[in-house]
Image (cartoon, rainbow, N blue to C red):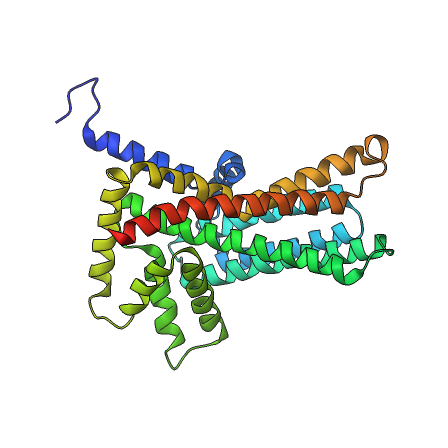
Length: 322
């Protein structure tokens, strides 16, 4: 028993776990969005609002914000995107509070994020093509597509690694493997639908992209009866490695994961739209807001993904070699 005025080893461990879990959240969401979402989710706990409805809502708001970008209404678009991001945080918090988290709900949320971001890419591409008629429209479209491709990888890597590293911190069964198994069983069942196959495909491709050794290990035991026990052993082993022999690599992986988040790309682009929407005509009269926002967002996405994968590979490849 800890004496008065001292901290027990267990309390220190819990504090470290809480700190690492907090560091997994991207900076903007960590600052205020998740706090607001947690507060609102508790208020809606007993209200008959399903989290999937929130996911559908933030998809609609995201598409509307993209339309505002196309119409050059940048300040309203920034407000709409902020509302979309708050709703995006709320659906997950509400699912946890109500206790009805599911692989299907996570797939729906991921699809909603993809629809919102692709709507932004399409709106931006159309705006650029119309405003830069002297340039090849196919070249502009190719540039925007490349940005969307890199940004999509940022989002999928972030959500995947946030769940995996969070499970390692808590020494629980790997949540990513649990969800992959759920998608695998659903996709191979008589009740399989297109969402089941999309969920399995998305998770499989992202795991392969981050670490081939990891995917090979997961897929080899996809039909094993004792897969969960092995996954628990893996999580405990990785927790030990993360806290002892690979502590530095693990902490770098946690920080890298937070900055890979696609919400950071939204935040960077929203800041550009906000500044140029407020002061563009007076201070930057010859600057095109969409071109600047997309250029800055692309540079951030490329840099975050490159550095993030470097640190994630450093930890995961080391773990699976041991």
